[in-house]
Image 1 (cartoon, one colour):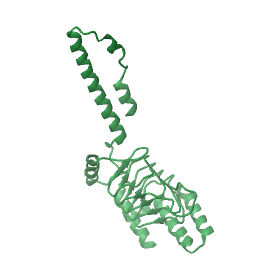
Image 2 (tube, one colour):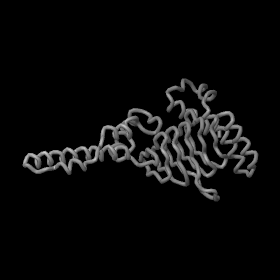
Image 3 (cartoon, rainbow, N blue to C red):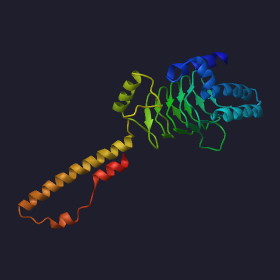
Image 4 (cartoon, rainbow, N blue to C red):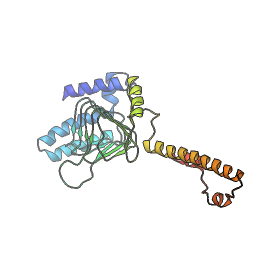
Length: 249
């Protein structure tokens, strides 16, 4: 347990530029404190001291604002940054070297027993406010953007954003990988990655504008040839692409 905590301290120092010393991490980082409480609570849980385990977990929640069920399995070098409002359910599994930001929920969708919470494989990054719901698997090295809602598996190395979460296309993931190569990818993704649904809407709006321009050119040509197009113009819909572009941005 002490070796695992030492590794966590070292990882926090490496990943958080605000951490100026190991003593600062030990004394002032609730994510580390929550992990320490969980080590004790989980050990009691495995020894069937369920009530005492829940009590230790509850004390950890009181002092850190981070709720981790004692039955959850957490790997080594897991970094919980800020941490306030994080909820990790009983059957959740978090692999080695994962990073979770504040407001993350690893929740369940079933009242039945068995596996009902997510599994995060090694190296996963979950952005602030993201919700991972149900017994889904987030593949190794995957990233979930801030405030995303994930209820389906995310492949290894992929980046998921949006509500419900969608997988970014390869070109966008390549930009994210480049950003990460320049430094640690805080909050899951870089700032220039749009929700793919928003990009699709923008694409449809652009296509609609182009189509309208072509129709207008055809009508003008027909009118120049002496053909009455008044009825066609009267039936055209009033469409403001600029307004729609603004409301989906």
